[in-house]
Length: 222
Image 1 (tube, rainbow, N blue to C red):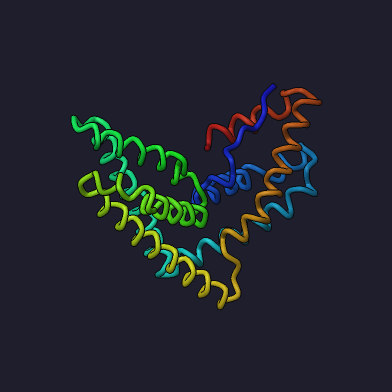
Image 2: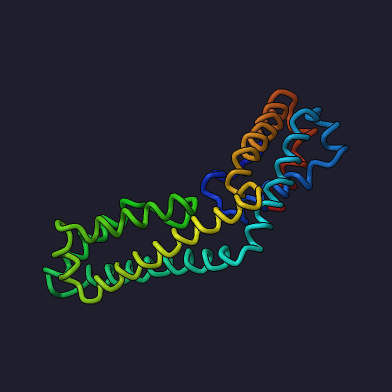
């Protein structure tokens, strides 16, 4: 059966999320809506997409948003660099350094793929990671690797900078009485999921003929 396959919405960054729902919005033409018989679901969805678009536009126009994006990219790049340090340590001829690098690598891996987390969750995860690496239990392993302490404290500093900018940007956004893009997503997501669920159910019950061209086009555009 042909069906719409979509990414986990919670893991999408803001621009990715808006791009996905905007593409669905674009493809839901009046003719398609009538053909599928999904008029009650589409109106709230299109309204939600419009609100999310406006919210993200406001945030992107905020100077703090640019600084946040820079800090977000920097903390992720720093973690990549720290991982390279650990990988080199694992290959070190000194068994003490090998052991330390393996233990620290295991800690980093517990926190998963930072880039796939929503930004607020990413901040919490980076903070937890830095705190765990610098705990009394793990500090001897950090000290065993040259430059490890510098990498961790730099990650910690940039992450806290991001957190402060996040709070400031949201405060400014709320003062203008505009919802944030993350708040808008809380409305967009269930509307989007309802449409996907309905189209997939219709394709299963009625066969692919009426729906496959739309589904294939949606997948191809994404």
